[in-house]
Amino acid sequence: MRLDDVRGFVLDVDGTLVHRAGDDVHVQPGAVELIERIRASGRPLVLFTNGSHAPPETFAEGLRAVGLAIADEELLMPLRSVQVYLGPRARDDAVLLFGTDAAREYLVRAGLRILDGDEATRADVVFVAHTNAVDFAELERAARAIGAGARLLTGSYAPAYAGADGPIFSRGAMVAAALAKVTGARPVIVGKPSRAAVRTVSAQLGVPSQETAVIGDDVGMDIALGRLGGSRTILVRSGISGDVEFDRLTERQRPDEVVDGVAELLDWLS
Image 1 (cartoon, one colour):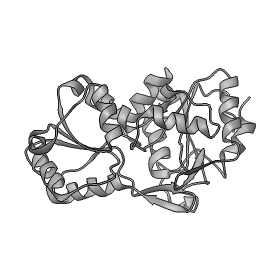
Image 2 (cartoon, helix red, strand yellow):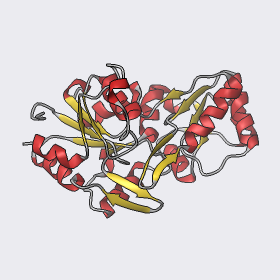
Image 3 (cartoon, one colour):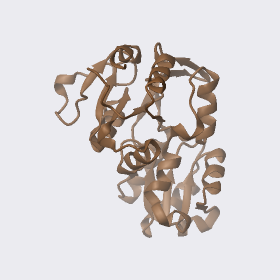
Image 4 (cartoon, one colour):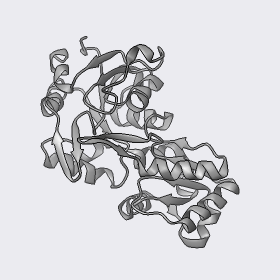
């Protein structure tokens, strides 16, 4: 495959460009060179991670520290796409947040109104990001808010993502699943894969989604995101979907191309 006609690139992070083992981040072979090659071609790129424990600038800083030359604005995540999902109402809706202090501070700076304590039962939106701790009182307040009509949003509903030593389970998915079970609400994903994520990517790249390539390791998130936006899709086997049997995937689930790692993409870029 050649990628000469692609006008913008969307790259996953964990399992695609890097692997994480606790606090250690290991850059995948070819990841630095791939980013350099895309930049040399004059085309824009973004990274989209479903991680949401820290704001985009913190993620970008961490990637720069290991050698990936990523600007803050090139790092996309559910903390950004939830604002796109809420649209003009983002500053009006009251939000009950399951997230870290860093995520809360970022969303408050962005203009969202975050409720605390008993007033959280009057929330218009319950948004589940990554959280380090949760208690039953907080879950019950969220369930009551959902029962009263609040929308249940989640950054990701995937059970796990790729780590260097195997799957890392999603705490956000655990919390969202608990709320879905007791309320009967269906969580709305605002990270990958979602229309909100597609719109966030297109706005940042300045390129229609049909003219982009989405590259990632997860069939259910990265390839699904690309399919949703009509993008070209490339699965790398270096992460969570490495053992997937592709003959068992439906036509809508299958990527356009499969590679073992991002280093193989260097020959596809001029």
